[in-house]
Image 1 (cartoon, helix red, strand yellow):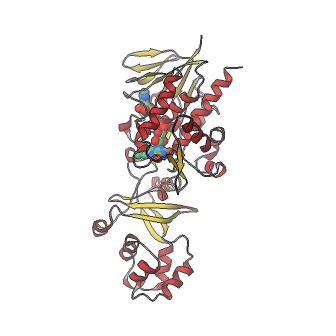
Image 2 (image 1 turned 135 degrees about the horizontal axis):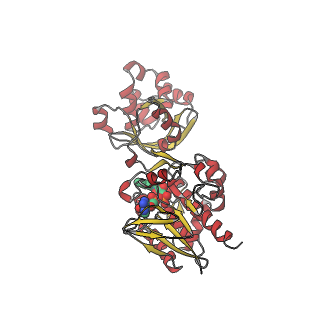
Amino acid sequence: MKATIGIIGGGAAGLAFASFIDTSKFDVTIYEKNKTVGRKFLVAGDGGFNLTHAEHIDQFITRYTPHSFLENALTHFSNKDTQKWLNELGIPTFTGSSNRIYPEKGIKPIQVLNAIIDQLKSKGVKFKFNKTWTGWNGNAATFKPNESVQMDHLIFCLGGGSWKITGSDGTWSTTFKKANIKTIPFAPANCAYKVAWSSKFLDDFSGQPLKNIAVSYGKKTQKGELVITDFGIEGNAVYALSSEIQPALNLGEIVPLKIDFKPMFTETEVFNRLENSTFKNSTETLKKGLKLSKVQIGLLKNTLTKNQYTSNKTLAHWIKQFKLEITAPASLNEAISSTGGVALNAIDSNYQLLQKKSNYCIGEMLDWNAPTGGYLLQACFSMGALLANHLNTSSES
Ligand SMILES: Cc1cc2nc3c(=O)[nH]c(=O)nc-3n(C[C@H](O)[C@H](O)[C@H](O)COP(=O)(O)OP(=O)(O)OC[C@H]3O[C@@H](n4cnc5c(N)ncnc54)[C@H](O)[C@@H]3O)c2cc1C
């Protein structure tokens, strides 16, 4: 008789695990509280389905906090393997100009999800919907509505604490805590940050992007994009600094970011352009000589005094090091991902809970962090593939 596996939670991590587990050795069932799997996977597909990133795996690994935790998984199943896997499922991918990897144009997120589901069905994986995991009864998993299931292996893939509407509401963490499994409170990651914009500035610039900039905090700098919102700022250039920003905000500090509007120029080059300008005034020089956008010029005008704005030295300095203070993160529910969940020292190197043998945790429910750009899904796929490989090979011995 085959050994049994219950996958609890049908998101990116659970689906990837199911795709790689050997169903000739295991009888596999996915238990999902929603009436369908992959709701957050589909939300991730809204506005650009960034499945992974094309950068070299050595650099790729460094994007994670802590990166040592994900190194094995990412080496076992890399960004290239994700492309190969999806291609074999009939989902070709392409690499965008930012090195982000997407399904080829015209392929909708639901088609990606369905391709994975079809593969799982064809290899005999069973789906049980509307099953909310509620805890353990001895070694059995209990579900609402009333069901208790005894499995040889339980694979928890319950997700993080943001975007509760997708089903990943993090309520499982209370049950884990009661079972003496160390958990860390959820916190928003990859989230917007609050800025005290004036209402006049918002009237003019809310929703406007700041493109091709570099944002720094402490020793870390991230190139990318920001968007001005009524709440503050959002975008990949600040998401990537979350691991540095959040601890300071948690201490009640105001975090001073520095924004470089012209990362390709030195401050001296910017100054020389301003000095040698033949345009009629500073604003014309910024617009036509330095190709700053209206919102960048708006930020400078909104912040500098008239004297500062007309001093080329001061202006050049602010173009290279625009100071912006952020005061708080957005709420957990609005964040793209969360940190917290099961503490990394509560599991072994095969994601097995130290407290409960043959119970494993993978995906965003574990306490790691990564910026947007495809790194989140890649980590979930990689953990799923590595754990499946571990169970496939350990069942041989
Ligand atoms: C707006 C948005 C955009 C994003 N864009 C991207 C992107 O472009 N690229 C990228 O890499 N990442 C992106 N992400 C992040 C990515 O979607 C997540 O990191 C990833 O889905 C996490 O996968 P997971 O399997 O760990 O958890 P989830 O996908 O959250 O799946 C967890 C599953 O467990 C189920 N569940 C929870 N509790 C129970 C229970 N008690 N019983 C049974 N089932 C339960 C949930 O219903 C859910 O189906 C985005 C996220 C959001 C919110």
